[in-house]
Amino acid sequence: MHRTRARLSDGREIIYYDEAPGRVPVPDPRGLPPVEPRCEVRRDPLTGDHVTITAHRNARTFLPPADQCPLCPGGPASEIPDPSYEVAVFENRFPSFDVRTPPVPPLVDGAADGAADGAADGAADGAADGAAGGVARARGDGRCEVVCFTDDHAASMALLPVSRVRTVIDAWADRTAELSAIPGVRQVFVFENRGVEIGVTLHHPHGQIYAYPFVTPRTERMLAMAAGRDLFGDVLKAERAGSRVVVAGEHWTAYVPAAARWPVEVHLMPHRHVPDLAALDDGERAELAVLYRDLLRRCDALYDDPLPYVAGWHQAPTGAGRDLVRLHLELFSVRRAPGKIKYLAGSESGMAAWINDVPPEAAAARLRGVTAGEASG
Image 1 (cartoon, helix red, strand yellow):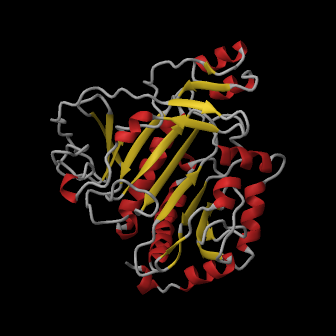
Image 2: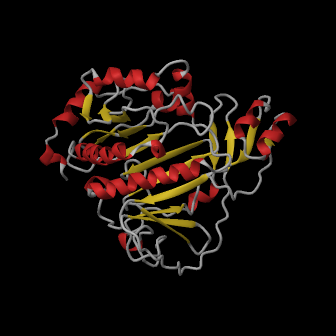
Image 3: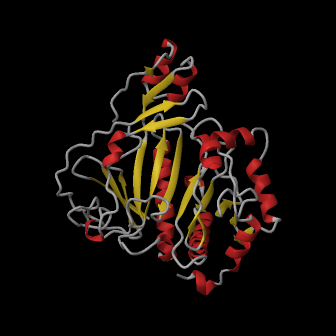
């Protein structure tokens, strides 16, 4: 994997990842004005959850026609000036988190003065402790990147050759290591949203990376559950001995979790305890490229249409608790049957109390039962 760095006309970084050396980046001809992000994090005093406020994202591109796709190479609207690319990563033009965000007032509505010092430098966690029932505010420090898997607008991750999937994995790992080193970043999340049912705004095959200035609520709950034991090792051992394994290799196992929330939900976990993608060795990355593509093809073969999904890599925090969380993929879909979508209704949206219409054992059997021909896409 060969990495080449360049800058877009508004100063954002773009990085090309190629299987062979020799790329000379084409300058961005657009003459864009500098990005002026406004990213703010507030902490809910009732739950402790962080909520990010980003008014500038309301103007982001929404489902443009193919000839105006900003992820296709070299076009007049393209974020990628080169006429072709293999894998390209660039800073999001409409970020949720950005270290260039100007300072925000430290507190709102009745918060105590003691929180101001924690909020001023973007430490939303520290700010909340002194808020005395008010709402702590902080800059949304961090970074958001777009990861383009291919320059082919009509492709998908499932249809890429294994060598390209491996390049994407290496790019994910490289970005995870670099973003984790940014001062103030607490966790790095690599993910792909696919399908209009999920809410994607661009059809071109791509994913994103968020470098958060806080530990996410889901990970905080995992940390609490993992305290004092090898939680992920215990779960993997139990799943590998059960009936919900979909596919397994020397280094990885994909399974439908016993308490799956979604009608289609698969976790892919390494057999070795590693904190993040950057910590995977060559053998683990090589097998992941094969198994991940196989898993995506199985998912696409479930229904007549390509499956809408979210595929997110849970990685350990950069600081406290890093030894407790094992890297793993969570892939899920809102499609519960052909032509039918699972909408988050009152119980899920209002109380986070999940109800799944599809038994996990049945979902695992269906995914296992997809033949190689059906899964080949």
